[in-house]
Image (tube, rainbow, N blue to C red; front, side, top):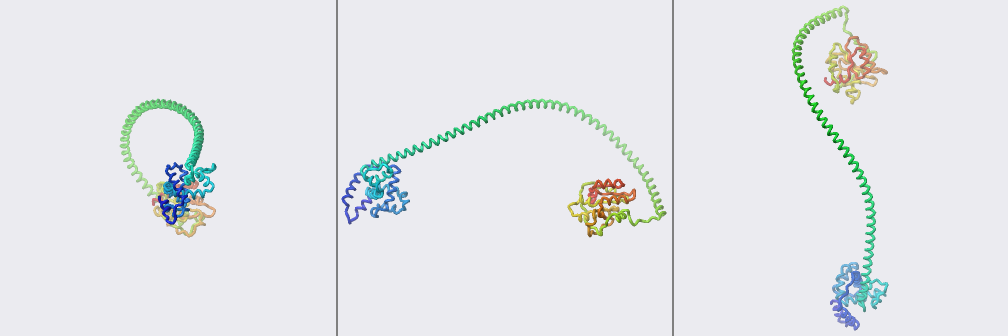
Length: 465
């Protein structure tokens, strides 16, 4: 053993008689097997030994534990537990030295345990640990008693734990029973609802079955009617084919008659054209003679010029722009009217521009319309007048194109009234074409013999140009 060997190797002193006797007693006691220690007692013995180990002189600490003695207090019992337990079991002298220090530090409890008794109020684990280290007479009994107490406390704690578990299980069972009861009530309600729905579904199934039978019967009747109708249609188709053949025969006869009629009409028209030419030539010569007889020369002013001097404002200059329109009407009718001799085209300016290119400013709207009307005047040679509302807001207009008259209504008047004045000023029989989508304007000029046309017709005509 390292500790006894180290202790007896000191040359300056010999073992005292008391220590020799104690050593003999320890050797006699060590012959008996070590008692079985509860885990709590073993841990307490290790903790007491680890706490007392640094207090021993360096020469009394076994070599195997000197490294453990240098550990920190909180690491000594945890990391050196195995080495401390092995040294206590194998080295009685080391155990006696540790026991002496531990008993001395325990005070009255240590003295009582060293005397072989254990106070009734003492911790059995502490008593067993002190008894194991001090080894008084009857120490095995103290350890066994402490072990029984520890086991009894353990059993009591286990029983209490089991009781708590049982109570918790009982509470959970009661809760589960209550939940099961609620679930059962829900299931009963759900079963009642399902039964009610089942009854409804059965009723719906019966209704659906009746409807299916009725549908099948109706389908059968429809098939019968279809077969009958197919027969009737076949008969009608046969009759139609026969009628078509008869009509084709009559069409061939009619085409032959039409060809013969066309030739006859062509001959008659040639004769009519000859007569008409002779009549027009006679009228032209008569008109020339009448013009010479009355000494009529070309007029310096037209009727629209007279109206403009009285009822309209003429701007000093007009603006030009390229035309833009929307394809919303067929301009064919307008072309026919403008083809009449000495036709006069009167345009409601803003009514056309706001319908055709309202996204532009008023200035650019006027430019675009006036430029387009200049093209129409150049193509047809007709008189063209465009009327706008309010000349007081217009300044610096460029000159209008040749053949286009630009008028603005005076303050207090509207362009509609000015258009009606222009129509009334023209002689009866002259072709007048008024462009405006205003129904009131159209109705007014129609009463005076003019031809009203929608703004879309002019826009389409401008777009084509």
